[in-house]
Amino acid sequence: MAEVQLRHIDKRWGDFVGVKDFDLTIPDKEFLVLLGPSGCGKTTTMRMIAGLEEATDGEILIGGKVVNDLEPKDRDVAMVFQSYALYPNMNVYENIRFPLKVRNIAPDTHDEKVRRAAEMVELTQFLHRKPADLSGGQRQRVALARAIVREPNVFLMDEPLSNLDAKLRVSTRAQIKNLSHELQVTTIYVTHDQIEAMTLADRVVVMNAGVVQQVGTPTEIYNYPANTFVASFIGSPAMNLVRGNVYKGTFTAENISISGLNSDVEGEVILGFRAEDAIVAANQAATNGVGADVFSIELLGEATMITVKVGDALIAVKADKEYSTDIGKPFFAEIPAAICHLFDAKSGDRIS
Ligand code: ATP
Image 1 (cartoon, rainbow, N blue to C red):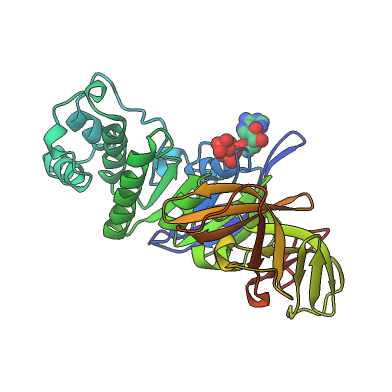
Image 2: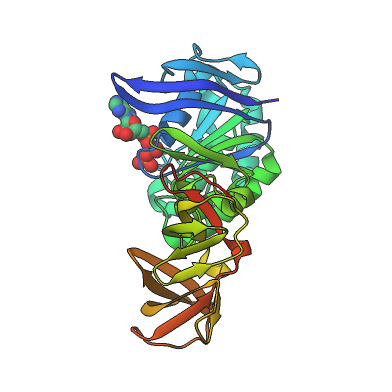
């Protein structure tokens, strides 16, 4: 049982607040992803759980036990970093075995444990190679095997895929997902890549400037972003956000009008909708649509992304792959009221 509890955790260096009031329970076996832009406090949060950084305030519990004063080695957590930190003079077998040696695990169990971990990450045929003779992806798998072999209560992974090229990142991501399903160990995973977060997580924590913005399943975060920060951070492209005015359920901004919004709010708001939820139309819709000149055209393979300019905002609409137009030509899309999100113009918080 390795539930991890973070109770009102703060991290400050002098006046600078790195993490503010992080308060969350991570149930046993959950795969939790900390997501946010560079400098938002993800790594600091993880390092506090590992014991590499001391929390300024708050309590950290692992398996029901307060661990604030425990050394990293006594917390029963295994970390995987973006730099693989392998021992260059040891072969793969010895690298994977290393944590068993330093923990004084009975030597007669080592061989079986090392081979099982190597098998899980498909490294059996490389056991005698030195790290220098492996590809980046294989080295990262050695680092994973070295974490697995310890059979820890909690895995902490800090951007483990960020040194891999795009293709390898996708296949190693699938491997981590499969491993976590097999191992069923509580995992806290840090990334700034929203696709990684969405594909791996049971729950995602979106952070900005040291503050948790939203905690939810990938679907919740995608469909009901709590504020404009989350809306603009999740999804590719990010959610379209347009500033305008709403009156009696009708939103208007330059080149956009949408009626039938389910909200009593009046005045300035930010309207959000996703590129794939708008519907390309042949003509200007009487209501509920956008009409503007084409600003850019991107061929995505499975679709064509059309961008138009509305005031200061760029609005993306996903058209099908056969759609053909030119920059500067008029473009129309229907934006059904039901797919729209409204956010407060000042705070950015979700209204409806
Ligand atoms: P990245 O994705 O770039 O790794 P991150 O979200 O993991 O970013 P952190 O490394 O947690 O960010 O850093 C959070 C903030 O705390 C940053 O502004 C960073 O400069 C600051 N910070 C980190 N360590 C220290 C330190 N020892 N002293 C002062 N400030 C620090």
